[in-house]
Amino acid sequence: MPKPVSLFAPFHLGAIPLKNRIAMAPMTRSRSGQERVPGELTLRYYVQRASAGVIITEATQVHPKGVGYLGTPGIHGPEQVAAWRRITDAVHSEGGRIVLQLWHVGRISHTSLQPDDQAPIAPSAIAARGEAYTTQGLQAFSTPHALTAEEIGEVVGQFAHGARNALRAGFDGVEIHAANGYLID
Image (cartoon, rainbow, N blue to C red; front, side):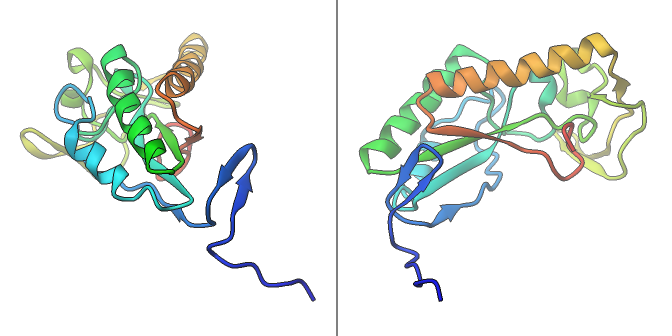
């Protein structure tokens, strides 16, 4: 019979050494404002949880076209990378580990949340059922633009760019959000 393992025992998650086996699940906080740059509230939130073995951050857009919710952060621009770097440095100074969840919402969006009010993107031009919370209140998800083969390659590049930016920002790893009807799902 295998020996029981304590929840508080050290563990290696691949190449990432963890001080315990507790993982903080990602939860959308919507505290990053219109510029999608995480600030003081976000920093405080993650530092307060640095005692977990690993923190998985809230879903973070890899591109402005990946936005589906007000106030959620991005990782596609230099200001976002710098802001996340402050957070990862602070979590690391408390002995924590932190992984960035990469995200593109695809059709789970509204035109008012997209650059230049364009249609969101998806594999097909079929609107999702439900509503997006916009600055004008709840509105039905917009009918998306169906991705071309070339655009699929661009989205793959956006995820790669987001992963590279996450490493620049000091994250210990990345996780790709692939559920809930978002683009990868």
